[in-house]
Length: 145
Image 1: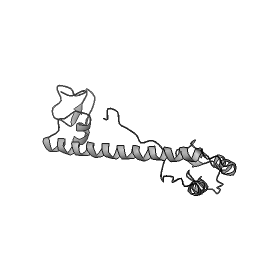
Image 2 (image 1 turned 30 degrees about the horizontal axis):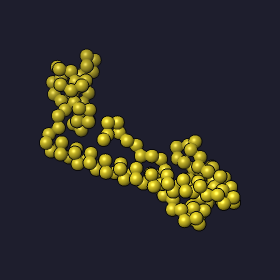
Image 3 (image 1 turned 30 degrees about the vertical axis):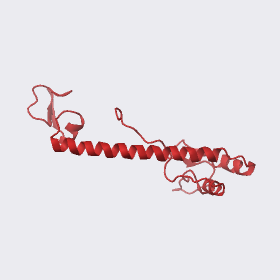
Image 4 (image 1 turned 90 degrees about the horizontal axis):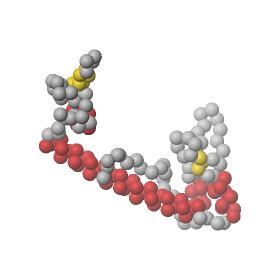
């Protein structure tokens, strides 16, 4: 008997209380430990878990590389480049990291993603390769090893 599964439950996948019952998918029952996986399901889940761990590790490697690139850009001491970089700093107040220094307008206008073209040009001039995409750390699941 799994956690949260009443002993009087008639079949896996149908959950009942005194006032209502509802059906869940086999996958959900497996995810919450309410059903035992078959050998095929266990093998498929093991492959999926290994793929998830591989992708997570690759995401962390990319993230750490991105942090090193941003630290190199932050260490720039040229006074003109430093003032421009300070103007075009990341603004993390919204869902996506945007550029605080780029001008944008219009009813449907959206702030440019950071690092913006200006920051990329300065980084390129100094030989610093910046990553593309979002620079937030990858998420990890609880209990993931």
